[in-house]
Image (tube, rainbow, N blue to C red; front, top):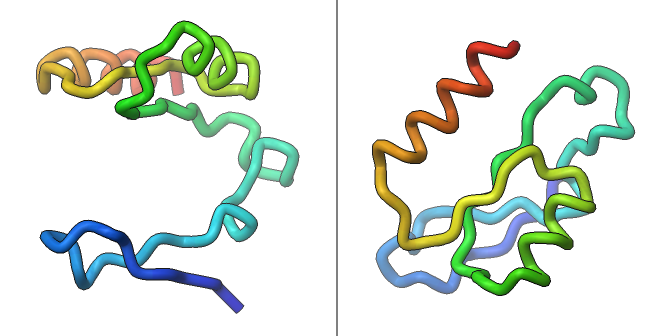
Amino acid sequence: MTSTSPTSSASCSSARVIASSTWPTAAQAGWEAVPVLMLTAKNTERDTVRALDAGANDFIIKPFQPQELLARLRRFLAVS
């Protein structure tokens, strides 16, 4: 059973957020090769280091440039 809760954003009232306990992890079979790109508003060095240490392959701080995001995604697609 998947647990969901509504987002706090009024503009996305119909969107649902999947509880983190239901997300697949790299420790689960078949997910080892899936790259993790974090797109976040957290902008301290501590946040970046924690995300990368936790297994993120890349970290982008908002606001970001769309072309930069696409270039980073292309890099992951070229590797896989």
